[in-house]
Length: 241
Image (cartoon, rainbow, N blue to C red; front, top):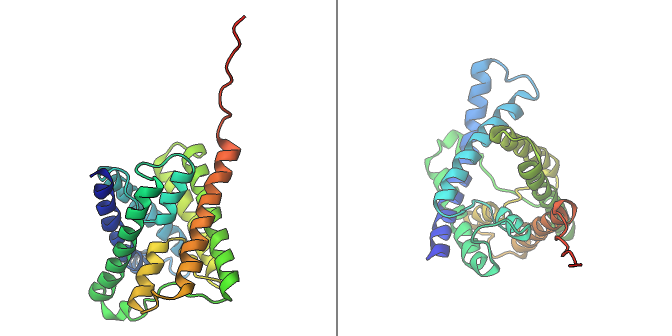
C-alpha cells in the first residue's frame, strides 16, 4: 500500500511539474516586463530560478505527504543510489517509474490543452541534436552533474532551504542552457517521455537510450560518487583489552 500511495503522488507531482514548466516561462517573461528588466541578460534567469525554487519547495512538501513522492525518476534513483531515498527500492521503482511517465504525459497534454494558443503553439519537448551515442553520453553527463550537485547542495550546502533550492535551480538552468545544443538536457525521463508520447515518438530507441538509460546511469553515478566522497567510513570495532 505504501508504494501505491507514493506512485500516486509521483504521477500527480510529475503532471503538475511538467504542466508548470511552460507556465513558469510565461510568468517569468511577464514579471520581467512588469519590472522593466526584460532587456537585462540575467534577469530572466534570476526570476525563473527563484520561481522554480518556490515551486520545488512546494512540491517537496506535497511529496512528503505521499511518503516521498517525486516528479523526476532520475532524482528518485539518485536518492536511492545514495542510500537516502524513501520507498526507493528497485522493486518500488518498477512501480513508480511508469507512474511518473504517465504523469509526464498528463502534464504535457494539460499544457497543450489549457495554456493559451499564442504560447502553446510554440511548446516543444527536448530533441536530440547530435548522434545517438553522443546524445546518450551527454544526457548522462548532465544528469550526473545535476545529481551530484543536488546531493552536495542539500546535504553540504547552506542551511536555508530556499537558498539551497535556488542553488539547485541555478545549477539546473546552467546545465539546460549548456545542453540545449545536445539533447535539450531535460534530465527528467518522465518529462521527456511525456513530450515524446504526444509527438508519437514514445516507441523510439532514441527516447529510451538517451533520455532514460543515459539519464538514469548518470543519476546513479552521481549518487555513487557522492557516497564515495562524502559518506563517512563505517566505524571500526574496538578490541577489548
